[in-house]
Image (cartoon, rainbow, N blue to C red; front, side, top):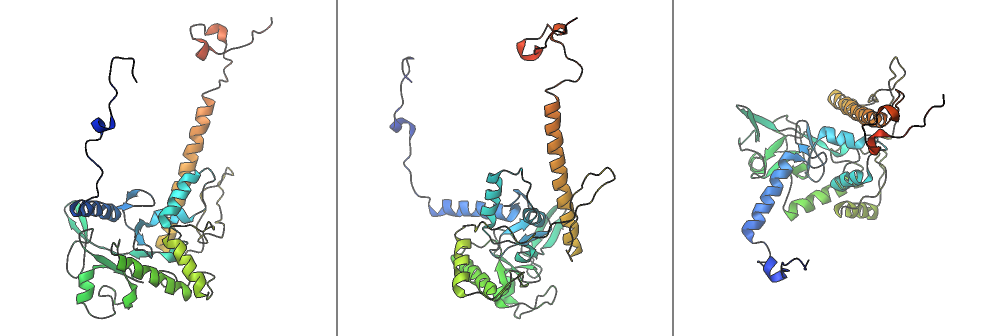
Amino acid sequence: MGNDGGSIPTRRELVKNAARALNTTELKATQQEAQTHAWTWCPLSNRPLNTPIVSDCAGTLYNKDAIIEQLLPKDPDTPASILKEKEDVLQGRVKGLRDVVEVKFTVLKEGKDEKWVCPVTSKELGPTTKSVYLVPCGHAFSEAAIKEVKGDVCVECNESYKEGDIIPIVPLAKEDIAKLVERIAKLRETGLTHSLKKAPGSKKRKKGEISAEIKETTNGVSNGKTSDAVKTKLPEQETANGQTTAPVPSGIKNSATASLTAKVLDEQSERNKRRKQGLNDNLKSLFSNTGYSAQTHKSGDFMTRGYSIPKKN
């Protein structure tokens, strides 16, 4: 700056508008944009939402394969920043598949496009419609349809549910968020998970411990404990040449979940294999096994010609 015949701009010349708070219209636009992103993208894998889709106790939508991949043992080469980023997304809410419920949307096809609709009102489910799903069945409806249809039985599968098990999808209202926090706190006191299944190794704990754990979860603080979703080591298969392939999921009763887990494991193994193979190729390219001689490659410079010790006759 300076000594070049130019001028040094002042702050008044660079900052034309003073900082101000967003107005109501801008706040709604920002909120709508965030809602649209939450309804179309998985926050864990940063990929578009694709069936099967699951939701945790906070009403957030995820790809099921992303949840399974997160629960599986991590590759030791995975950067700590990526692990922390994913833990911050889950905030300790998902420790196993029992902590999520598969959301079953009614799909309406219009040519090549597909959209989720309410099976009762035929309204499109998304950021513009307040939507809910039922636990434990997972069928999704518009909130207005649930209020109009009186009863405690799902109209899609005739499975009973309680009023407290109506979960808003991607909630924004503080009242809805507070109800979800209170609901999961009561479930943990009784040793149940979000899907109303019994938590593994659950025991009745004091209310003080439950409230402290809920407070940590809502504040986004991870307790740093290893996920108890995968405590047993998965057996590995050996090929004819002695190499090990992806672990085979064992103990999973649901066939769809087992097949999806196997698919995730295969993809993970393939990625690791490609990364290691690429690393080996890069290292091999730095060396030569053909007896490279600097005397026969005089056209190169000192960076590419290398150095070799002359052989004695």
